[in-house]
Amino acid sequence: MANVSMVTEFLLEGFAEVWEFRLLLSTLFLMMYLATLLGNLIIVIVTTIDQNLNTPMYFFLRNLSIVDMCYISVTVPSACINSLTDNRAISVAGCATQIFLVLYFAYVETMFLTIMAQDRYVAICRPLHYPVIMNQQFCVQATLVFLLSGLPYSALHTGNTFRLSFCHSNAVPQFFCDIPSLLRLSCSDTWNNKLFIFLSAVIIAGGCFTLIVMSYVRVFSTVLKFPVKEERGKAFSTCIPHILVLSVFLSSGTYVYLKPPVISKVVQDIIVSMFYTIVPPFLNPIIYSLRNKQIKQAVGKVILGKFHSRV
Image (cartoon, rainbow, N blue to C red; front, side, top):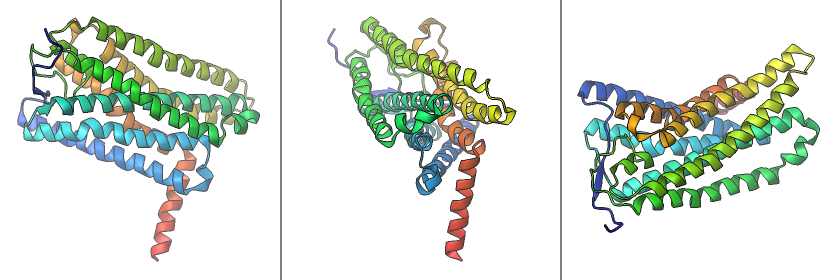
C-alpha cells in the first residue's frame, strides 16, 4: 500500500452531541481562552514596562506567557467555533499544521518550565553566582535554542505521522488533531511512529523532568536550612506554583501520548487533553500573578500610571 493519505479531510470530535451542552462547554472554554489571553497579556506588559522586573525569572515568565497565548490559540478557538457551528471538518493540511504547532509550543513550554526550575535553583542555592550564571546573554541564547530546536522536533513528528496511509476512518476521536488519535486511524504499520514517540518522551520529557526534580530537591534541602520561617515560606511560595503547573502539564501530556490504545475512551481522552492544552496556559497567569507580590505591585503601577496620564 502506498504511503499516501487516502482521505482529503478529517472530522474532529465535538464537545457534546446535545446542542445545549455543546453551547455550554463552548462558552466555558471561550471564556477560559479569553481569560488566558488577558492574564498572560498582563504579565507580558508589566514585565516589559516595569524595570524592577527586568530579571531572568521574569524574562522567562514573559516568554512563557507568550508561548501560552500561542499554545492555547492553536486549539481552543477553532474547536469552539467548530462545536458551535457543528462543522467538524478539517483539511489534511490544516490537521498537519495543528499537530506541528501543538507539538512546537508544547516543546517550547516544557523547555521554559525546565529553565525556570534551574533559575530557582541558582537563585536559592547559589545566590552569589546568580548574576554570572543567569546573565542576559545566557537567557537570550537559551530562548533562541528552545525556539529553534522545537522546529525540527515538531517537523519530524508531523512528517513521520503524515507519511502514513489513513483509510480506516477519517473521524478523529479528539477535539483537535493530535498524533495518538491519527495513529488509530492509520492502516499502515505505526510501530516506528510509536517507538519515535516513546523515545522522544523518554529523552525530552524524561530529561526535563529529571532536571526539574533534581533542581527542586536541592532547592528544598537548602530552604529547609533557612533559620527564619518567613524566608522558608517565601522560597516555597516561588517554587510550589511552578511544580503544580508542571505536574498537570507533563502528567496529562504523557498519559495521552503513551497510554495503551485499548483503554482509550473518547470522552476520557478529550478531558485529559484539556489538562495539557487548556489548563496550564489558564493557570499560569493566575498562579504567578496572584501569588507574586512584585507582579501585583507592577500591575498596580501600570494601572495608576495610565489613570494619571489621562487625568
